[in-house]
Amino acid sequence: MPDTQTIETPEQSAPADISDFPAYPVDLWAAWKAFRGLVRDKEDTRYVFKFFHAVNGRSYETFFREFAASDYGQRIIADHEQLGCVLMDRKALESYGPGTFAAAYLHYLDTENLSPLGVYEANWANAPEEMAAYKADWPHLYAVSYMMNLTHDLYHVLTGYSRDPLGEALLLMWTGTQT
Image (cartoon, rainbow, N blue to C red; front, side):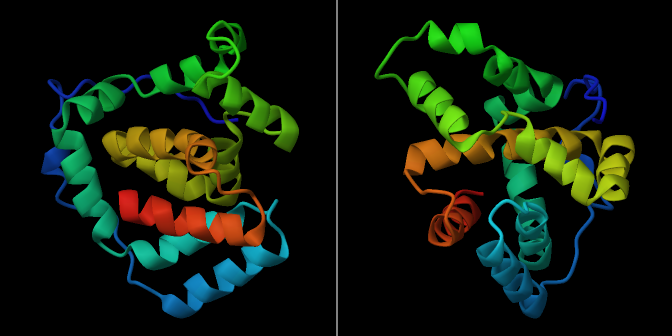
């Protein structure tokens, strides 16, 4: 598993000044193939990353700049590990009790046999060179990517979309709209 060391704070390095932001052309055929792959095997998360890689184009740059300018975005960029620590602290999540979002999240993880870091780990497994480049060359983007990976399963719980092909497709659309 990759190292998740804390990155520079926004005061030390301004994330909005990224002049060589990594962007890729929109490729609808690749997006369709990735979506079909996900439909065939919902457990193969590499298709999720291929899908977003194929459809993001420069839109992720816009999202990133707006996110980095927000107070929440600056906190995530300053300490991207904080969200992972919260989601990995099962005792703390259990302390909120039944009927809470934390309980629903834990139930989802347990019934689906998932880990809070699962999407993040799958992202590294799918594209280790790209993730290493993000971490080395665009640490602020890496922090946002980490946060987005960890929130994927939270979004399943919030939306109620399942992990079946239709649920994943709806979640991809919902996530795209949110970002």
